[in-house]
Image (cartoon, rainbow, N blue to C red):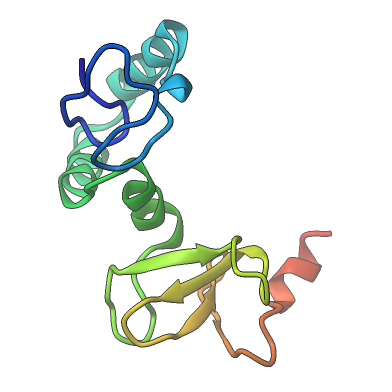
Length: 127
């Protein structure tokens, strides 16, 4: 059996991946996997190629999500980024953080943010 998150081998009875610590009980269902296959089959070839490149750059599903949803740092262009949802001081999914240079930005519009002001004006427009 393989981990649904990192594709490393795991024992059949394992509940957590020993490599990436993913909860193996959260693996996608057969219906969810079929839905993904259906969506991928409808994608244009160039978009599918970009998606494949992002997957090959990502060691885990979380890395892939950060690459797609957070993107590269607007200051240093590093792809070592993530959202600030779990940061107790910021606690905002729409704020991206560069782990290399520390830059914060809005993942919706790309505006750079600061530690003293991590609210983006574009969020007010959506309300």
